[in-house]
Length: 426
Image (cartoon, rainbow, N blue to C red):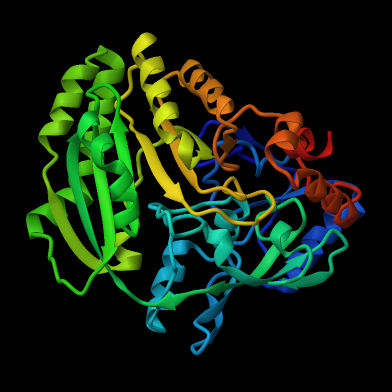
């Protein structure tokens, strides 16, 4: 069997057994087979994580055949969805019922189970992560039994974000909302410009985020708000965005990586940026093309630490002459009560640090990670980090409660790989 790689291709593994269940019975059988052999089983959503959550040398399972909405409650605006459903399919199917996700990120290739199990989020200080949209779920436990949990149950806020360590999700009920349109505005601002208005911007816009490019000290600012206004992209602009932006950006990264001409390539990038606006249905406006492979680390910090942490990151980059054409993405998220949510009980700012796949990320990531740790930073569970059990015990008030629950539900560690054993079982 050929090695299996994650999306970023920064790790690979070769499982001894692969499972692709087409129904609940086959899903249960896969879990029972692993249990009976006293082996582990891990589930892949879309492989869109940068740490080895999905890696397994034993049993490996994906939910690609468990797709689609199974039922809709139009009055409550809720839908039950098979856990393997990709977010882009969910958006399309929900729209047929005049429903939409309350919020989502700018990548829609993940599976619903993978996105919710790792705390995937969008941006908006009045909005929470996708995991918070779950109102009910069913999962196959370590004994192969189908279990259910709903809002108000004692362990529900552990199950909504569990890293796949409590069981295999089968079906998820989401709280949706009426379909709505968004107006998206993007513009270039220098660091001094966006810092001057950022406090108002995060309060006055339903969705607000920054893509800060450190080489040129500027940001692509994005604002999204509900609208009835119809703003059509020109045919040329739509063509460039769909077919040219990605290849041109990759070519600039290749050139910069090999020639070290980062400043020159950054100026070329800036020349393509203008104040643009478009509108459309939310499931069409949220996602962006992300075809270029990159490395990513993302940390959640208390919102009040934004300015100081950002200043320290910029100073670190300048001091060590960090060179990359990839941006730092900055987003804002409302607090929640999910046990392992990075936004647990705090209004949050997320900093996502990126490098092109051909660049050495370690010094950059490790240095900025030390800054994040000064501000009680909690890493995104699907992104690169090097924290250990002792770190999470300090960062998460309910971490020991989660570990105790995991031990009760899966005492033999059927759902643990080596990576999760280091975090949850040590």
